Structures are given as C-alpha cells and as structure tokens.
Image 1 (tube, rainbow, N blue to C red):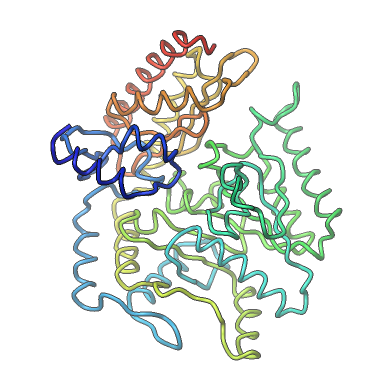
Image 2 (cartoon, rainbow, N blue to C red):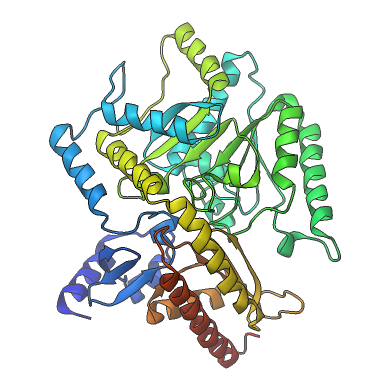
Length: 460
C-alpha cells in the first residue's frame, strides 16, 4: 500500500460510516480505495486493475469514463448547473428525458416523475398510490404486496417493501402495511418433488389467498423486480409474472415493476417486464438510467394514475411532494446522453449476446462440487455455494464462504458481490467476448481457491 493510499484508508476509517458494512470489521480491515475507472475496469490506488464484475452496483451500463457523459455533464454545468421543477418551473434536459422515457417504455406508461435514487422512487410510489386512492374515495385501499428476498430500497417506506432481514433488523421495519409473499425461487423454496409448474401454481394460489384474506378492497399494489437481483439473483419461474398480472387485473390492484436493476437492457431486453411478458401500471427506473454517473431515478406511470392524482391537485391546490433535485438538469442531461449511447451502440443487443455467452460459461462451472445452482438472465448471474450439493444444504453460518470468495475475487482481479453465499455478477453492458471469457476464467479460480479454504476450515 502506498503512503497516499494508506493515508486515505486511515482517513476513511476515522471518519466514515459505510453502507452495508460491518463497521467494526471495517476499522480493522480498511477500505479498498478505487482511484479511477476505464471501460469495464477500475483501478485502486496501488494501480491494480480489476474487472468490475458488478458494474459498480448493478449500474454502470456504458462502462467507466465514457467521454460523452463527461462532456454532457460539463455542457450542462456551464449552461444551467441547477434548477428545480417546483411551481410550474421546468428546463429542457428533464423535458427531453421524460419524452425519451415515454418513447422507450412499454405502451401505456405516459407520465414521469423524477427522484435521485431508486429508494426515493419506490418511497414516492407508495405516496403516489396512497394519494391516488384517497383521491378516488378509497382510503382503505393502502396495502402493498411484495416478496421475501425482494429489494426495493432502504427509506422507511421502500425499506418496508424490501423483504430482506438485514434491511428490517433494528430499524423497526416494516412500518407500512405490506404482506411479503413467498420468494419465487424454485431451487430454494420449492417443496421436495415439486415441479417448477407446480411451484408457480402454489405461489399464485398463495397470492390469491392473501388477497382474499386481506380483502382486495384494501390492497393497493403489488411490487416486484422482474428478476430479483440484490436478494440473490433469482429469475422467476415460467408463468409466474403472467399469473401475477392476471391476479392484479382481476382484483383491481396496481402492478409496479421495479426496474432499477433490470431496466434499459440488462437482461438483453429493453426492460424486465418486456423480457417476462407483463405490462405494469407503474415502472421504477434508476441505476442504468445514467449508468450511475449522476444520481437519478424516474417513475414512469399510466395516464389513469396521473389523472386521479392531477384531479386531486386541482381539488386541494397542489401536489405536496417533491425533492430539491427532482429532475436535476445535469443528471437528466447525462441520462439523456446515456440512453442515446445505449441505443446507438446496440448495448441491449450486446447484453443479449454477451449475456448468453456468460450464462453458458458460468453453467459449465455448475459441475463444481461447491456450486449448488447457477442462475440468471442476460448480464445478471448468480452462483450459489452450498455445503452439500446433493441435498442443497447451505453453509452454516450462511455468508462465510461467500465472503471468502468475494475477497479472493479481489486478489484475482475480479470484483463480484456476495449475497450470503451467492456470488453475483452484473458486468457493464459494453463487455466483449474476451471480457466474458476472462470473467468466467477468474470465477473458476475463485471457486477452486474457495473450495480449498472450505476444506481447510472443515465447513463442508
């Protein structure tokens, strides 16, 4: 470690509280300080190069240091570095980006509201839906349906929708009315001998039973990620989303597609809802909207939802919700240029082609004795590590093997994410065949070294 990087690490240890981090362990271990990025790679302060196998946080679609995004930010900073959208104010970047989003998203999604993060966006969805139902004279229609293992953010409302224990533990969540349904992951939650089709039927029956028990007149919306990512990379079983959509239509429940990770081509299709064949009433986007060069999220929703809200603003005089940075001009300018790059360079097509290569390569690693399941779609993949392959028995404690694999990945020059004992990959959408082959090769070495460690520790 250089003197500079050591100084930075010590300053970080003495000043920062990191998200999703064991603070006491961080005091002992210190940070990996990333200094710059280029394409699919990032470099630490010692000059070591890493393939960013998670695209930052599932988000840097066009890669690092894209000159066009730097220039878009610079131009906008010179012209109008900040303005708001309160009280009838507007500016061209947010107007043009809203137009572009309506053009790109499925038919029927015709209105846009901007926030700065997916968490803020899902928090806003809760408020939009509550406001709408109050406006329609349905004050009892306020409950949400979500799923265990689902991830929708970390604000008080969006964190309540999230179905992960660490996001609730000691935060006194959930605090909004939400029912978490069974996670639609057949490998982990299917009953012994239960086919995938039977599993899907059971989950749909469970959803309808909860709707009937709670009363459809009390349930406002169902929210879900098309492919569940942050909870462990879990694609839905065949027929699941079509069945959920049918239940929502039957019981007048809004369908919210959380596309914060899946959106803008990550699965090799424009959006996750398109990939899995369902039509939402509300779509939430972020991350790849700007490739995370700037904080930005967008809620795109139907005219039906808009009309109910707009009528109520006329009745009471205003829509009492918004953020200082809603539709920030620099963020929206970067987002617009980012979407142009995705289209011009056919990065959705590249995600489909390179995603197929990555999925095929990783599935070859599925024979490894440490790997219980390889799963994913497009450029999102997960390898679940198990103590016993035949019985699917997880490690005890869960997460220890995954953390070791994560740290070995740094040594091998590949940054991945460990979700418990699932190793997650989501590389930038600009990856090439050579990049994919290198990722698969490094994952093979990570598995071998992790297996040696597991044997030494007597965990399997």
